[in-house]
Length: 246
Image (tube, rainbow, N blue to C red; front, side, top):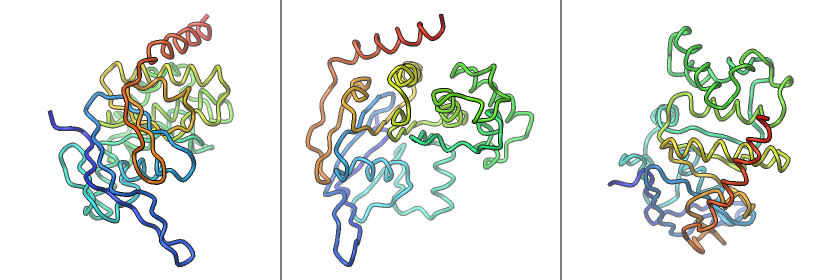
């Protein structure tokens, strides 16, 4: 089966103060459909640049990138925007919710860009919010929700278009430990339902939820290993979710 994500000899160089900064150096990486992968590394290691390239938010300086067997590194901005809307969902540390819109309206937003009819948008947003356990909070504003609930709204927004790939950048960085476990349980549930999940984290405890851990250092892949302690991490997260429900 063709990998969903394929990076081939990919490099990214920025210019800072007139000097080149090599964020990525000749990186090759594949991610299969249905995988859950954690990308780890210290600040400046290249992990966030990799996520930005995979999410088509940044272009490589050299090398090739294929998403769903489509070469995307040379697409124009309009084509990239359409690709992101159809095939990629994003979850960020800071939630990025519109403060004056309800949870329902925030989840509807990606469908507005696709020109989906209002009645269909509302129904799909309702289903997505129920999928993340927030059906009863559909008409709440972000400031009426806890941090964990706001992150669940952002996850609902990311999955409402049924993307092929869910990208999460430090998705629990603004959450306490109990809420972190609940949010990670949701990512694991989405993965179990067949979604491909790639998350960036500096925290080994978060990386343990993934089936595979790719570690970056100085713009190169330091290690790429299967995670043998995943079951224990999922069991802990599931227990936290059950405690919340009770």
